Image (cartoon, rainbow, N blue to C red; front, side, top):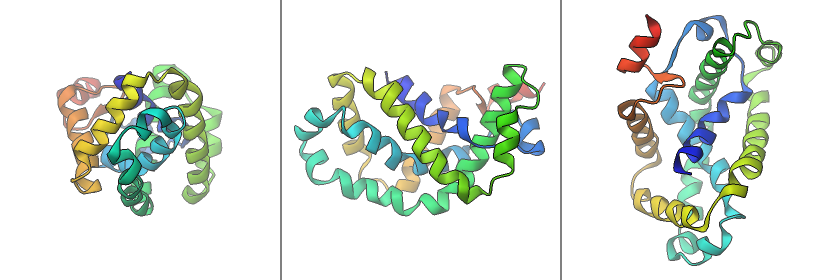
Length: 190
């Protein structure tokens, strides 16, 4: 389930476009992954609040401090959006290449949209995807884990949490697409 949460967060990538340079890149920059985690945190939190409401109500942190914790990420979304969009472009290009799509019409359509016009679409789509795909499968124990994880990382600044996520993706071998600078990324480039 925890892998599914990470996968869903990375599935943010299903909504943006791929530019020619991004289409050739087979890896995501660690900084862009960090930005994506920072950007996505409020969207993810909003999506799991309903299904996890009983478990969150039993947590002192979730009832008294979680909203302020998440607000720190919301304040950084404008700053994190460019990196998030770059990650989306690389992921979509990698996905199209993996499926042998070549030039995907959806990618081309999104390419024509200004980056700020994509933001609300990304937020709505990902929020709904989480609610429909992930949230229905959330088990009470996973909600308890989410609350515990949030409490454990809450003393860290949001930038460090995004950086930690990028670091973990890099050292654990995330490979769809790989994080640039890792052995997995080097293998894909060959």
